[in-house]
Image (cartoon, rainbow over all chains, first blue to last red; front, side, top):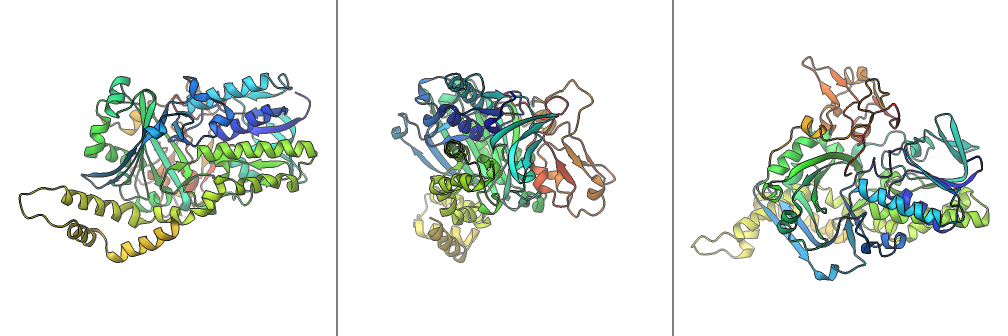
Length: 440
Length: 100
């Protein structure tokens, strides 16, 4: 491995693997380095991989019974108070045929599978013997010469390349090392995700969640789920398990002096959740920090001489109310970063000027278009009115609306009026309405 | 369904180099800062693995063995007491997820 690589990719998560696949397809000579024992060993997500970019990397992946767990054809959004759940539910056979618009994945399995696919593509490339996926190796330093990235250091060993792609994930120590992110990132726009994998007999799981074949459910929760803290809950069905978890604002946890694992137990004792998870067995507990989608925590720029940043290392993640998107952003940014490297190789120019094409491509893609367009929605979703007052109001309305008492029935408008007065005010609703109107 | 206490949850985590007693910590904490000027000691309740604890005398302690590499403390601590590096695959701790 004396010779210089076209590119070194740091991190074999979704972004790094998408970049690697793209480089391998384009006959580039690269090294993909992963600190985990295997690709995926260190990776955690909710998680649904939304959209259809996966089919670009692994065409007709759905024909294979490996890697992914279930496709989503059933979406639920639940507003909770302490005893109720008011759920918006949408299920459609429209989502049953590939290409799917979202698949649930467990990263330890998915990333390892995707890495095998990358290796197969390397084997078919011109650099079958000179491109590598190296696991169990920690990149300690990005080697810089005259402010240009020229390679990486692991222990006493140095590897050199024309370019480096940092795809190290959210706790982006190397991105900070090269000066593209501040050494300290404040808690304001960061959230802690915690999750349990709960195992069921597969038949029981399919019956309980009305799944057939490989169909799956995604359910998000707001209100009681996060116990007064900014954030919410999620539930995704995997093949034989469910992923049940919370995403909680770090700053809010700090201010309210709450423990994430206590909130998770409280969430699990909610009468509705308790029924959902009955007879399940917890088989793993994990945690992972995510950004809220507020652009303020993105690195100043995503390129430098010889260097590109993609995936969560660039804090590319967003929840604007429709879905928690992160892995699809990672995938697209990895593809775009690699395409930029391919173009730069053709021009033989890995300067900042050439590599900034990556940021332009990302800005032109749905990733940054959505992040830019939905900043107001991100702020609105993290507003206490939305995470606390609104779910209480909705549940109170539901409780009264669905109560039959053999007494003269109040008009729905009257019930709503009473619920609004009890849990918020019309002024709150007007404010949310204005913000919502702007955001959507 | 039985609710798990945190130690039971952490008992399900597959940690690296579990057989090694002497590991290289990937987080260093200046607990002097926690125990003198920090107004909130936030890591002692925000850490999902309870690596930061307060004893009966109110003194903050840190242990890295249970860390699940989430990064929460990196953001929760705004006092400059917490510094991170990635755990060393051979002599460090950290996780090896079965599901992820």
